Length: 180
Image 1 (cartoon, one colour):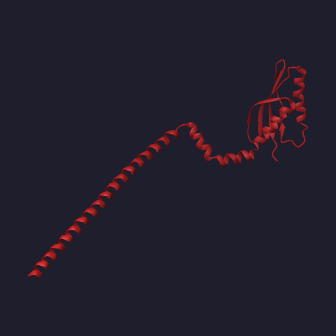
Image 2: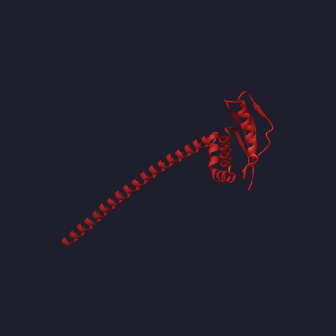
Image 3: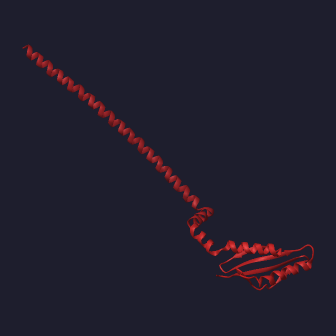
């Protein structure tokens, strides 16, 4: 009988052991499940906050794009390579530099430039405080000398009128670009 008692105690001890292991496993699995559920809720909240921020930024971008200056900037940035290529091909800076050097040579001030692919239009002014004759001389020399320049990059169109006051002469200048 003693052996039966020992067997009963052993069976009771094993079933208690199984019960304890089962309870421990239940607690571990429940804890892991609760941790994962909490992490999921936290991540979902963070994702929702991020989505709200993205929607807010998209709204702000749309509002900014309505501003004409920013829209113009976007157009310039998207066309930057094309614009740079056109400027390089046009050689506009070379033409303007040449006009400015002519102004220095003949003591003329050029203003109101306009440029297209074929010509440069500007207003030339000479202002000589010393003598009226010098102003006339400067204008006539500019026109005469310009026609005799060797290897020019543009030609001077006829000057149709000259306006003046006591010491100042002003005339419109159109320079046709010579395409080489």
